[in-house]
Length: 64
Length: 149
Image (cartoon, rainbow over all chains, first blue to last red; front, side, top):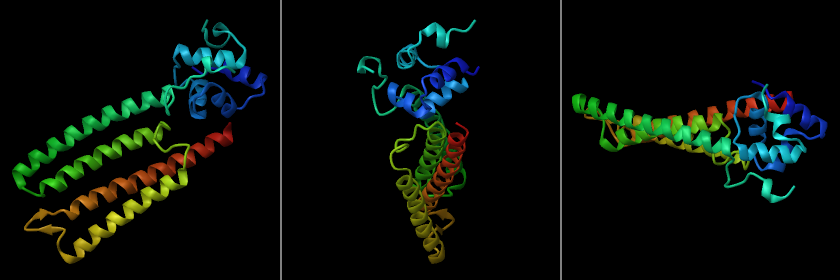
């Protein structure tokens, strides 16, 4: 399932996939895979992304 | 952002590590199956020298490993020097192909009904040319993705 919330949060911070990837220390392809729903990140990477985007885990990764 | 929240444990990130683990698993299985096939067929027909048989099995497993890694952006040189990577693949492939062709022309590729050492060069050239093609195809796919992004 696509993670559109993460994509919109990244866009709201005016960050490219590359910038977010550099901020959290992964490759751009990994960020792309998470946004497309092709990769399920570990909680450690989720936290790093949340801190980089100033969002909570619930806001970005909780599925209703 | 503080280093506390940066995910960085090695040269590869967590997704790449997972991809490499999967690649090594399939490469290992491929190596075992290839060696098994070689042992059985060589026992029946005695078609090649042991070095060439082992080199061929290794080449097949390397193709499997590298293709999975390249497809998952987890190859060891990814994001560092792509041109150097492609040129290396092509050069090694062409060099080995040249040696194999020279041996075929000399008539030493197959001797007494058995594939000789030059067969290993042929297997390696197939492996590296395959990797070159896989790397080029993936590069084109990545460029298309970045255009979409």
